[in-house]
Length: 253
Image (cartoon, rainbow, N blue to C red):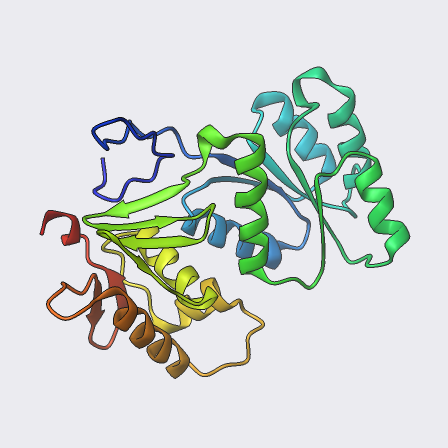
């Protein structure tokens, strides 16, 4: 098991955590190949197992073979529409409570109401922020399958509580802004993996963000200052010419 605990931690009297559960499986049903690939890339970076199909009839076949933990479903699909797939999911006992996030270019209130009324749990209008969609995925999974999503990431004396948006180092609270929190979360999910500035911009700020890569350096600097008081070890590693990573040896210090 990784030193970073990626399971939902069940605290005992001794403060120990129990073993990890399998990663949640997400089915992405999207006929825009570039968007489908982008979603899969970001979901896999979050630690999910991802299946992708581009047609509604292909989704029906896949769902008959494997029931995922959540489905991201485009409204307009060839074969069978996303709206019809959602109706069928809610009509079947085995998929009645399957979490569904509907993607659509339709932003009118009447269309949102229609999507939610046929059983979608959430509704996201294109174009959307990828980090926001990832947050919606985690929130929906926490409600539907709390046993399958990491609620707490921990390494050494550092603990990040996703549900309550809190970070602790030892006995003290670490006060982070939203961007620094997401940055730390992203790095802790993959200890030892080096992320370039461009990759961090994509994952933390989103592809639509029109900001300079040097912005990453500024926020990493703020994160380091908040995490490490005088004499405390810095958990963020700079890889010259490559980017940043969460030090995988931090838990062993």
